[in-house]
Image 1 (cartoon, helix red, strand yellow):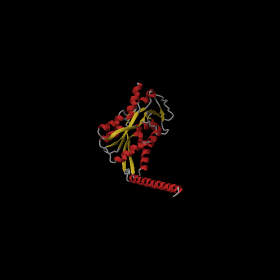
Image 2 (tube, rainbow, N blue to C red):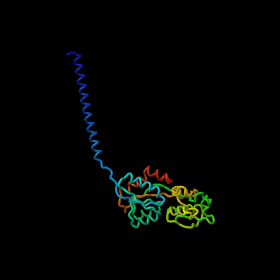
Image 3 (cartoon, rainbow, N blue to C red):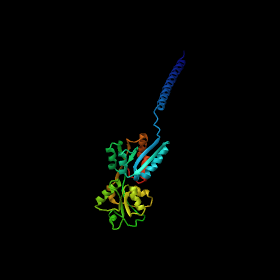
Image 4 (cartoon, rainbow, N blue to C red):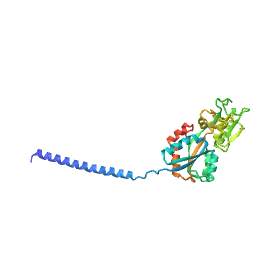
Length: 273
């Protein structure tokens, strides 16, 4: 046999061995891929949400939470978000009294503590936004209010939130920091009620949140004051033990804390946590 023929046969044997190895590798790879796909298809799907999720939320959250409620229902067909907006202290009293709610969003840690101390919260509350005070006046600011001290002008009708309400406690803190004694014409049980006194021309000014001035869309005028920086309220949120839709409650809280939720809240004037 010639040297040339031997060389050719050796080349063919090597080529055959390479092809066999390639086929074996391909089979292993195919088997591995199929196994991975099978494992993926057997992974449990996230639970499909349904039913009503009941949310108790501070009055100042009304506009932004209403928007987020609609978004939640759009993302989870078959669900409904039912809101109760009021003063945080009133809502906390309802929750500790046994009112069935799935989520509580308060306008201050102090108010939330009422709920956690009663053992009504499911898990630890988390701060999701912050809010700062502003003076609301009639459009055009006819009373020429430019500071907290201006609220003491003779004949000026001023409204505050009750001190038991987070916006009232924050206003009291700001007034004390400025060394100002103020006697309002009324104390209101939530921030929307205080703002409405100005909107309805029943008061010249009210100390409310920046978010409420923004939500009024020109029906009142906002006046910033430096003391508000020392009286910013943190807003905590939690699921509740007495709720009837725990999965939907957690999903709603997740939406509020998500980038999309924070965008809606930021556009409403809330500060980042």
